[in-house]
Length: 130
Image (cartoon, rainbow, N blue to C red; front, side):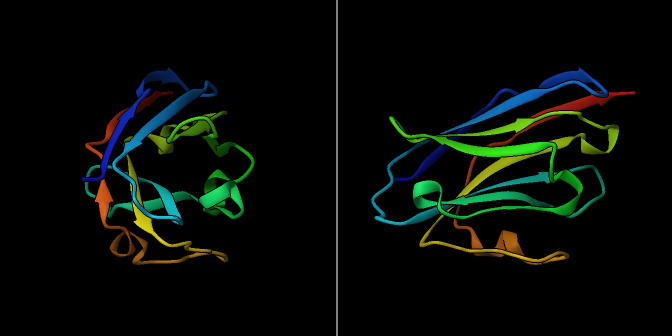
């Protein structure tokens, strides 16, 4: 059974940084994609970033490019989302998700990405004060 456990959320001032972690277990896929999503109150759950097996492909939505970095600890199945220069509009519950196979996203304004992922963590709250 695939399990994803996020951690690292919290309260930070605008301009600050946080690192989210996603510990994954139960993977039996040779290839997979990890996605980071976020959902603010009243909003749809949107993709923030994705990373494929071997870190060969990474994707970021435009609003976080240059500020967020997705990565993987190669010694274990732990994934990270380093968030810097946080803005109040980044505040949301952040979710880690997984799917088998490599999902290579590109371009802007992609919708429906959440429907492509099969496994979800419980989420971690990120609050950014102005």
